[in-house]
Length: 572
Ligand code: PPS
Image (cartoon, rainbow, N blue to C red):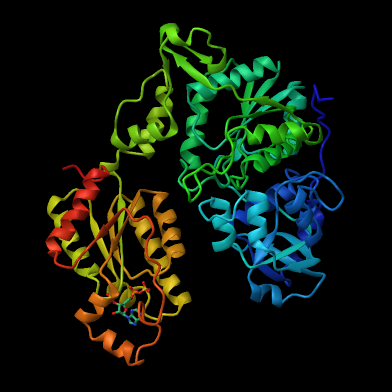
């Protein structure tokens, strides 16, 4: 029996009353506190406002094990996603069982308290396999799990003091109970929710409109503005795009609300999770498309999940989720009839021209400043996208050299800088290893921890330069692949990241020994020397790899210029 209508009674929240909150806030100031990460703030918001109902706090160890193994809490309730407070080993070790802690946002505001009933070291490899389908760092959530999340998980009930503060689009954000109240007020007894992390184009508008008609329901556009897949269009731009598209629906049939969810890109499990969240928000129907919340390709270049795995898992649990699935129709433009039609309903496929523009093709056209036809998207949406994503030749970018000490990174980087300055157009900043160690990282040594800090600082500066339309040239050793990847993600939020491996062999670097450091390293006078007594992860997929043996510096720099041209970053 599927819910034909939604039940709009209020759902439980974890907030205490206003008076209690004022009191608790004062008391909580004396507690040990944990500064929440951006992802934890998203999770906490949905825990507190009932978006993650029936959860009453961060998962206990027993609940976590059930969720990981078979998508169920210890009491048997369906819940597909581990929601944990991941912390450092040091922080966990400082706590006693049953201790209350304060949870603070990044400005130090206390949002909640938590009673820590459980503290354990999770088996992350198992979590990756079971929840995300593979222990493969190419999956954004697995990468997060291994390289960003703390080593220890804390579990226990949460007492909500106040909602996280948002300064953007306040009027567009609603708690589950606010949406329920809105639907009650409007008399919307059937509501179909559309989850999205992308701008809406005409095909989406068409399919959501059809879904609403089919279900005889009203429509809720429910975009995620918390955290989505690295590289997605930022939510500010997307919300402006959504606002433009809202006008295209028949008046007062459709509404939009922003959801501060931190997505995990977990495909099938994510779809079930999204369904539970939308049921909590008072929706009766939920659209699940092809490859719902797909994370892209794995490290072998294959899809993590089958295209309809999410629909299958959803269907199998639909009654428990309490929301009815509307499966996505793949909408395509039929040129002769000048309209969108569901691909599977077109009988005369061989006689008509079927058009479609993939996400990858759209990004290419934006990047190269090419035409985007009106049948594909609304002019208002294209205009917004072009403002945020000017063609690549007008965006900032980062060239990141990596290689052994003495491989020639600095020399090539300098030559590249001069060539780019000769061309003009964008300001160029060189973040050479030595310059950085003098100006930004003078207190750091060469332990793994210090090298990572050094590289993250470089990455931070490079991403700011890139965001502001400049060119950053970095030339550190950067021996660790995971750190380079983190920097790549920081930069790619704003522009291209061009990794150049200066592939001079360690033998050649040692033979040249331009600074005499290899000799000292061999004698043990310099410890932890990269390539001699410290590791170097050879880049697996750099944009470019340059040989320096028997090649002029000028030629090496020219190879980089050619690469930049071929990527559309500079015009030839
Ligand atoms: S890292 O690993 O990316 O943080 O290193 P980086 O900031 O590029 O600094 C490397 C330069 O420091 C000198 N140096 C060492 N390198 C490697 N290992 C050890 N232990 C070490 N101690 C000092 C060395 O001159 C490097 O300079 P480059 O320009 O790479 O030759």
